[in-house]
Image (cartoon, rainbow, N blue to C red; front, side, top):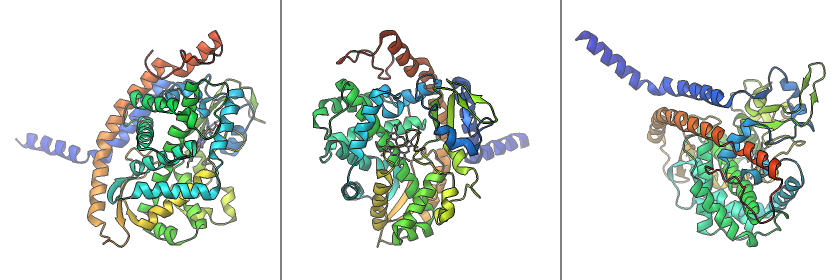
Length: 459
Ligand code: HEM
C-alpha cells in the first residue's frame, strides 16, 4: 500500500513539475534529431576555423557569394518558404535575374520617409482599433504589416481579401518555421493566384524576362512573406521587451527617438531575426595563417553567437549599451553585412517600427510575464490595458506565467513531432537540389512556361 502511495506521489510530482524539466529536454532532442536527418555539412562561423574576429571579413568576402545551390540546408529553407522559392530574392544566385529582382525591390522600398511613416501610422490605427486585453503580439502585428506591404506594392489601400490572404500566408510560414504547425500549401497557393491576377496593378514595372508566375512568386516571397514575417517578428520582440521592462517602456514612451533606437538596437542584438544565414563559397577563401576554406563549402553564419561575443553580460537586456561611442565596437549586424546581400529594408524597417511602437505605447500600457527567447513559438502573449483605464495587471500576469509554462510542455512535443516530419519531408522532396539538377539538364525554361516550377507540392 505504502509503495503504491509512494509511486503515485512520485508520478504526481513528475506530472506537476513537467513544465520545469520536459521542454528543455525535448528541445535538445529535437536539435539532435534535426542534426541526424540533415547531417553536419556546414562550417559554423564563428567556430574553430573562423573566429569571431574574422566573422565579418569572411561574410563580406566576394567568394562567400553562393546562395542556395550546393547546400543541403537550402532544401529545408525552400520547403518552408514555398511556393516558388527559386524566385525569392534571398534564394536567387547572383546574375541577371537577381539584379533585376533586387532593383525592383529597391524601387518598391524607396518610399519617402514621411509617406512611409504616414502609411505605418494608418495601418497601425486600423489594426489597433477595438483591441484590448490579452493578445499574442505576433498575431496582432501580421494583419497590420500585411496591409502595409500590400500598399507598398500596389500603391492603394489593401482590400480585405488581400489582407486575409497575405496574413494567412505569413502566419503559415512563421508557424512552420517555428515547427508549431505544418505548412498549408493551399493557403499559400491562393495568395499566388491572387497576385497573378493583379500583376498589372503593381505600381512599378516588374522584373523583365520573368514569366507572370515567376513575377508573382517574386512578390509573394519578398513582400508577402519576408516583409510581413520579419516586421511582425521584430515588432513582437520589441513590444514584448517593453512589456517585460516597465521602466524601459515608460522611458521609451516619453523619451526621444534616440532612446527608442537604442531599445530597438538592443532588442535586435539579443533576438536577431536570423539564427543562421548560410552561404556557399564560389571560390577558395584564404585565411591568413590558418588555412583555406575550399570552394563549395557551406558557411553557416551564426547571428546570436556573433552578437553575444565580446559583449559584457551578453544575456542581459541593456539598451544603454548603444548609448555613446563604445556602441560601434559591439558586434551588431541585425540587417546583415553591407558587402554581402544585406536586407534591402535596412533603412525603412526601423523608421516604420518606430512609428508603430509609438502608436501602441500611446494607446496602451503593456504587461507580460512570459518567457522571451529568440525563436518565439508562443507568439508573444501580452496584456494591453488602454491608457486611462484602471491598470491592475497582477492576476493576468499570474495567469500568463502559468499558461506559458504549461503551453511550453505540449508545444515542445508538437515542435518535436512536426519539426521532425518537415525536416524529413524536405530532405525527401529536395526542392533546391532538384531545381538546379533540372536547370542544368534542360537549361532555362521558355518564357510563359511554369511546368518545372517547384511549388513545394509533392511531385
Ligand atoms: C526588422 C525587420 C527586418 C530584419 C531584422 C531583416 C533582416 C535581414 C537580414 C539579416 C538579411 C540578410 C540575411 C543574409 O545575409 O542572408 C535580410 C535579407 C533580406 N531581407 Fe530583410 N529584414 C527585415 C525586414 C525586411 C523587409 C520589410 C523586407 C521587405 C521586402 C525584407 C526583405 C529582405 C530580402 C529580399 C532579403 C534578401 C536580400 C538579398 O539576398 O538580396 N526584409 N533581412
